[in-house]
Length: 108
Image (cartoon, rainbow, N blue to C red; front, side, top):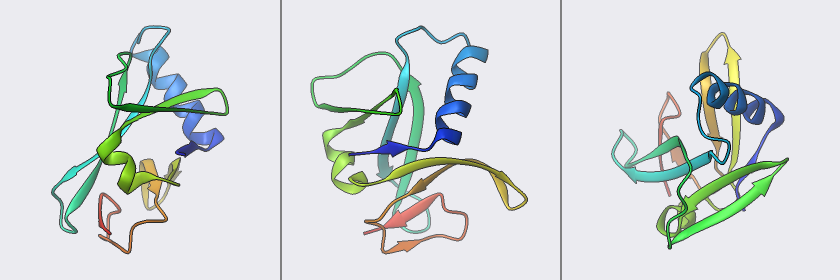
């Protein structure tokens, strides 16, 4: 399962409203090759479920991930921070054994 904190849920809903996303929009997360540690996180808003997608709901928020990315993201919590060290969505991934300094990429 992939979960979301209340802060991430609130921020995502605010962004979707500001960007006038459709009512059925959800958070799509994924992984792609790149970054200084080998893999990078992807996050976007979408409203199309694909045949290979895994669908989760946490705190009333729908989170969708393709099957391949899910292997790297199982157990991950999506958070949002607006502290002094940076602002944005953050992935707390228990599968990552190494992350880069900025938290944008990881390896398993």
